[in-house]
Length: 208
Image 1 (tube, rainbow, N blue to C red):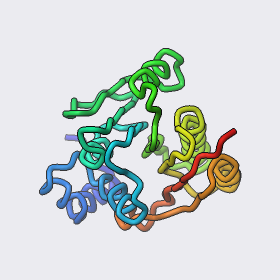
Image 2: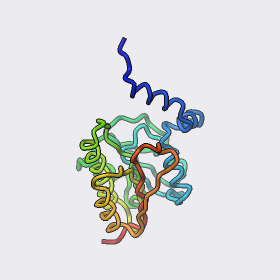
Image 3: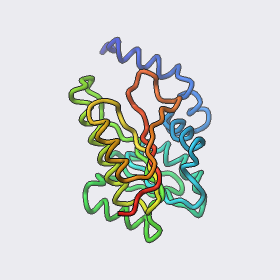
């Protein structure tokens, strides 16, 4: 039998004792990450009835699941990930890399003439444990999400994007402030204290 490393055993013990994990399971959410979006939404009123929402890196689907309930029948949730995701009622899912023009075209077609009101991104790379490798990968994903926001959001639209503090953080912030009228950062209670992750909350996409 393969023995688990001390770090993986510690993670498993922490995971299954995590109150957010227990709450997500009890309430039928797909992951504990839903409570990060829920907190941001309750504080900032990010998601509204009738909104069109694009959720990048959506699998396993907790953010799309929450967004679907918020936008109502008049709204639309479009989810995208390179990984597969089990279907969700009322959510349009496209599996593929949104940097691919064919995938991008499919996402735009789903948004239609209404355009996208809110872009969500909880994307993060698989961690190697080496900051010199992990931080550039994480910032690249945040940059991709920010660039995508500029391409698909309607004027005045908003975004919530996972960011990791470290190299490239200030440059990303400046880029966001050029695109949006309001930019700030939040760290939801469901984000583990030791994690460098925070969330860029941007609103009021500027007309170019």
